[in-house]
Image (cartoon, rainbow over all chains, first blue to last red; front, side, top):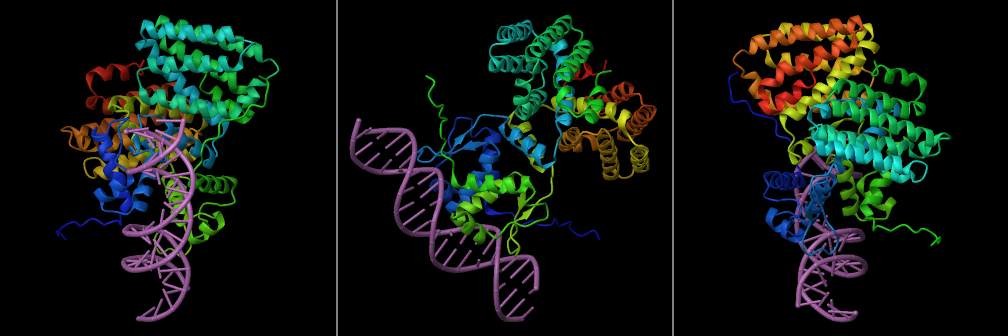
Amino acid sequence: MGGPRFEPVRAVRAYERVVEQVEEAIESGALAPGGRLPSERELMVQFSVSRSTVREALRVLQARGLVRSRPGDPNGAEVLPFSPAALHQSMTTLARVAELSLGELVQFRMVLDGSAVLLAARLRTEGQLAEMDAAVAAMRAAVGQDEEAFGAADVAFHDAVARACGNKLIQVCTDVVRSIVVKLIAKRIAAAPDREELMRRSIRHHEEVIAAVRAGDGPLAARLSRKAMYDYYAGYVDEGERSALRALLE
Amino acid sequence: MGGPRFEPVRAVRAYERVVEQVEEAIESGALAPGGRLPSERELMVQFSVSRSTVREALRVLQARGLVRSRPGDPNGAEVLPFSPAALHQSMTTLARVAELSLGELVQFRMVLDGSAVLLAARLRTEGQLAEMDAAVAAMRAAVGQDEEAFGAADVAFHDAVARACGNKLIQVCTDVVRSIVVKLIAKRIAAAPDREELMRRSIRHHEEVIAAVRAGDGPLAARLSRKAMYDYYAGYVDEGERSALRALLE
DNA sequence: AGCCATTTGTACGTATGTATC
DNA sequence: CGATACATACGTACAAATGGC
């Protein structure tokens, strides 16, 4: 007792050390987005490892969304700007391997979007309100004509709200989960028999949310937002799960 | 116009095809957790690719948390059970590269934990209530004595709540974000001058939350939970961000 | 435009440390 | 303990792709 407390030494692979150093360089700002890593051959000299090791490290960094490399590019791998792609990837994997149900995903959206509008009602600028108005206007223009444009305008609305809420994590997560949900049931939604009526009702709901946000009534905006989400998606969720969604409506 | 709509062909790397096929096998259940992939040499035969290609694919799969390989293992790479490790990794990267502030992370926790208790108040079983009670009892036993045990009991409490809420995505995200927050400020919290008083207050708050959950009053439980989180962490958040946290308290 | 040097993508061989039997 | 099979890592080689001249 009382001796020096040694820590267990985990065998750390060579490629991991390369990954760590490059990550540090990116995090510290020494490597900014748009910048280039040295070529693979240069890296193997600097790190004193083989090219395979360098390449395995680059694959991991690429999987984490930090860099991208193209064949033949004389400038070396490119440092990417931040993107939620990696989060998107791992959440999609999570959805599959953890067998997330549509109900769970929609419920998560209700939580996040509800919180986003709650915060947006406090923090929104006039410009952001205008963006929301414009998005709903675009939705209205697309009703019954352009399914894609309607979806894009809907995304624009929710993105404007998410940006207005002032929390980048909420913003990114809403975006990621939304795209997963849409990917799951886009076809079913577009093929709904009363599609046009659904669109109109969705627009009314969005307008009500905007009004509450404009009035600064966060709790009301949150309730309306969750209700709108429920109305739009509940039909695609199993009845057993639907009751769990309704728990968020009171 | 009106001709066949060809899609752009992206050059897909050999290692990507390997990744895709293995992912499909795992997703389809052909490869279950605990199962083994063929050895690297076997894989290069089956896929008709070189060893390097196989290894790069395995690195990507490992980065996504799907498999793990150890040197000398005669059985080949192991298929891992689901784990939020990949989500944890990408959210940590997100926190760094998107420069998430402590305030944003805490706010996200307030949203998720608040929603979790709201749902738990509806869906909790008696067994889960007992788990929450046990966790708080463990917290009480650790006050002023064992900082680690206190933290572990706190985690157990929040995990019991998250499991009781019935949404695996909420559960995983609360866990991931909690560990990121704790990692950020564990030292500062442990070194707080009035640490013991903070612990006691935290326990009181947890008890109040349990009472509300037991009574089935979700909205009250949610308010109490967010308030508890705010009290515990607000001191470490910049004043400017603190007001955004308070927006969740009304 | 075309050519060329460089880089990446991929393949193959080999050596070494390690885990299991 | 030895034998075997494995992952790790290194080095070389060549085709395909890119950017700059």
